[in-house]
Image (cartoon, rainbow, N blue to C red; front, side, top):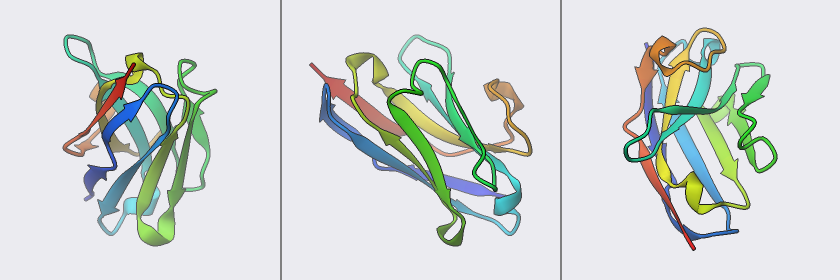
Length: 121
């Protein structure tokens, strides 16, 4: 029902900013909660933030003071604005879709391919 493609990753210095995009397609896109997860080498996939069609949001405590999630339904795109980046933010970032809020990646039905974010010292 929905296809997701992430973009915007890259290399950034600690303290810098980056904006990730998740472009979605599908007739029922606006009915889904879209979430961002990240996965560093050797670690489990970790919840970052999620947003509903009406722009209600949920964010992990580890990022809520630095990251902001938003969506533009007209463009079928969800954004993750990442500020004050730290080396520990380095990971592959994925967007995912589900019909309700959740922090468990196993609950999500649809996934993008991921985009690499690397934060250097």
